[in-house]
Amino acid sequence: MERLGGTRQDSRGILQPDEGAAHFRLVRRLPSDDLRDVIDRHWIVRWDLRGRPPFRQAILPHPCVHVVFEPSGPAVYGIADGQTSHLLEGVGEAVGIKFRPGAFSPFSALPAVELTGRVVSFAEALGPDAEALERAGPSPEERIAAVEAFLRAHRPPPDPAVETVVAVAATMREGPAELRVADVAARHGLSMRTLQRLFRAHVGVSPKWVLQRYRLHEAAERIAAGEARDLATLALDLGYFDQAHFGNDFRRYVGVPPAAYAA
Image 1 (cartoon, rainbow, N blue to C red):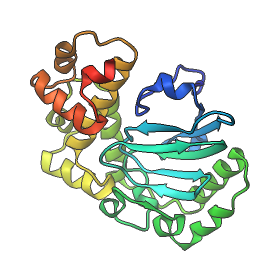
Image 2: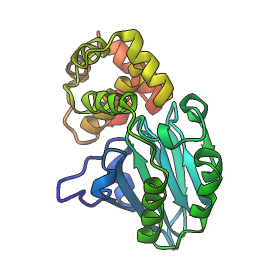
Image 3: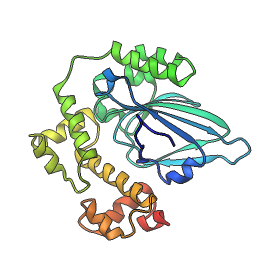
Image 4: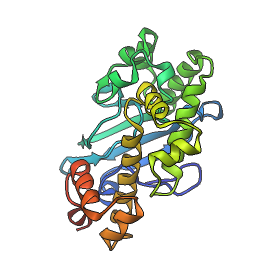
């Protein structure tokens, strides 16, 4: 797996990343400067499994929307509650645009909560003008450029509510692992009720759900990297009341208990 903007990239969201790296190549690219408040990154996955068995990669999705061009066709992926998986076989390539949490909302033809848990067409998610994106050139560069041009052409006036949601989500992702929703709300001068309302309107899931997803990403990455020998300490580091609560969340969303994932 390669680097993003010259810095070492993390593997958050990719379950069992070492096994994945043996089957596909992932490249991440920064968006254009004028869209960095909207797009987190672009990503390109390429695989060549000719003469090898198909490989299914499990993903614990980020709390954000993705616009994806893949061999089965283009689609917009809303936030998925649990893990998803993608079957790679033969030779192929997928190109994705990962939005910042909440930043897809101003462009969307659907309320955020209606997109959550769904995979829909470009036209359904972005309006009829987006149907032309499905005919974007075959190269990753052409597809990324087409989506960025569409966003520039359809960008609405700045919305302070969306800007707040994007900033809050960044605090959740970049803050200390033991951060709590109440701490985030206070840091941004918001009541819990206001924060919940903003996330429902623009992200489609609750702030507690987003914070939990980032905790689980951190946990899975530490375990996969061999940096979490003591699971009880890891649970406390991530702000869990005890190891049992952490284990229940991990098993529910990752599919196996933390100890089994480490093995």
